[in-house]
Image 1: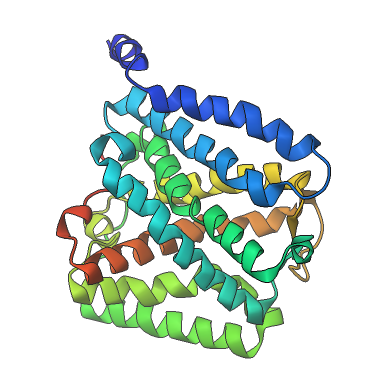
Image 2 (image 1 turned 90 degrees about the vertical axis):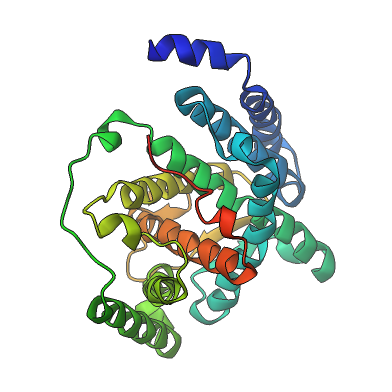
Length: 290
């Protein structure tokens, strides 16, 4: 029955075919063309990824980020760019990654092109997380321990996040991994205090499926980020002492662990912004149920 419904939806998911076509065109170009190309090809390649994933979600669930609200979907791209610039600003201190070849373009030009590229981060992560949430193994996950957003726990989160962030800023070569943890610990209690949506709304009832979906979804995105970066130019490389061994593409194996909490940070940042803007109907825009 599920297969029949998916088959009927296949013809109503043009974003899947458009996305696959963009990947088929721009993946080879990004690897095979000479000279500067990734500044210009990154966005269409990752737009293809986001559309293809959105199409797969629609086939499996009958709904998706794009189909629920196309304006909100565009908004994900708008919000994504400044949020990733936040991580770029923190990286000025941690020096966790750097870009090779970007200096070959004027500062203003490359900044604009990077902003366009950064706009794909949140749509890719949230779309992939929704796709993961449709997996049977995730849907059947049993209830776990209940982590309620009570005052002592929220205060503990906040203190932990502030300490992590301070350690990262003071001793960046040692505590640089906290870039992927500290913001979530800081923002989770802030969102709870402001009445914004948070993952605590699930974990309070022992439902850890959204947390797992976000973590695995971001890890999948991380794999494709690193895969398509490998033969790209300009490209990024990492400095992750003392874990610079067992590389998969340009990323050391242990470095992939940073992707797991990154999705939680993006979820918290997005809902903080939506809450501050007072766009109440977008609080439930990203869905992990069913």
